[in-house]
Length: 106
Image (cartoon, rainbow, N blue to C red):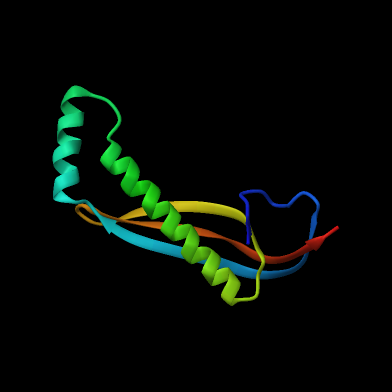
């Protein structure tokens, strides 16, 4: 599966546009991570606990989006974007979406 934020893929031509592919996850903060984050907020620096949580959320959303595209017959996704929304205090959704396409070598 080819994944890109671009409109085109070098060396490939789009032979079929399938449509929207999407994948999401909703994650909540963890008390243990919050304690570390509070400490980092006091002394400054990267909040590694949240960096890891967001990285895991992005990867899971991408994996789910790719599976959605595969199930529709796509072999690539172009124009990938991400969006987030707060679901409730301490929990947020991360959504990955793009255009599922079929590509062939030029």
